[in-house]
Image 1 (cartoon, rainbow, N blue to C red):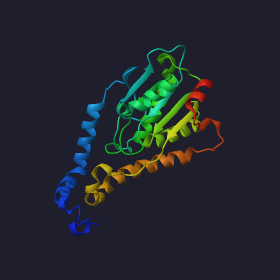
Image 2: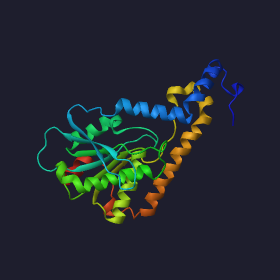
Image 3: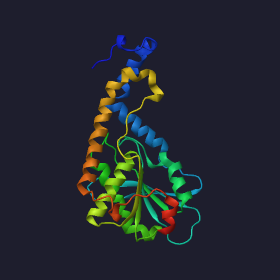
Image 4: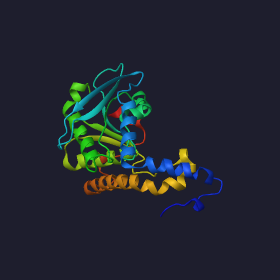
Length: 255
């Protein structure tokens, strides 16, 4: 449906023309890719103050490009530490691990651990199952390299926010199904594809909403793929291999 000026609230009609111009660029494929790449370029490599931060490129097992991963650890910790696979949010379309630095720091300050966060491929460039494959390949890399990272090898944590929460659930269930890696517990925070919000551009919403369909389509395809992966591997909620916990500090103390 095409949104006309008459369909816009009269208090917002003065901005209608400007909104149409901005909207015509904002959700074209080339502009989406430009914003995606520029925002990533600004944030990539940004350290988190108070943590030891490293970057590596690990091989893809599914024929993709090497996967950029960020590795975070406390500055001072004794003994092998639990290792967490952290999967960032962004609707499967955007985002990099560095964008969620405050969450990563909160995890480590709550209970010292090593966090490995992949910059998995996004649906705007590589559709499902690219993101899932990158995340699962990172889990297998953690399994094979935990000792050299200074981490424990008897079980791993999988966590993620929003889209990363959905990926965390799918990765955990695949690992439980195949036995490829032992998952101590998972923390999928707000899993799913979420919803597009335009609170920063509320005056543009009537004009831009139809163009969100393109982004929603790419998000939806990836989300449905991840959901299918989770359902295909799902076990009962009592399966200890894919358990969910709510208190990180208590569980990490027992881990």
